[in-house]
Length: 187
Image (cartoon, rainbow, N blue to C red; front, top):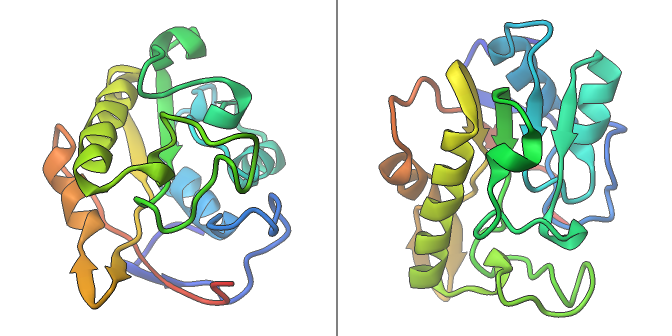
């Protein structure tokens, strides 16, 4: 399904990845991204934060070359060179980072608390880490490639944090699309 609108709704998350991994998104988003933006059949798609494996499963189902990793697998997007990890330029990439303490991952969903886990950072640290992560991904892309950043906004203690606008401000290059996913079955 190609993205035809800026607003999408998928009440059923589908069979991809682990639904027990808090914060993962529906595979329909990944499928829409690949159908819309992955135009080179032999191109590599990637994910530096595979989490529960949703994009891993979608890429396999669609027969798209894929390489992914995560902090819980030992790859640190804030310190390690993503281009070097991939071994080639990526044609497309989806990055679904933690949203600044919305769901804590290290020490909760996996392993021990980790210093570089973006889900354990306050807003200032998170913003700096997000910019560093985006630059690392941007440097790993081929000319004409596309990367998508899945980012939710946040409400905490009556305050609203517009994290999607933060992404737009930090990302180099031109924004070509914004997809807003209606939220279903959050917990």
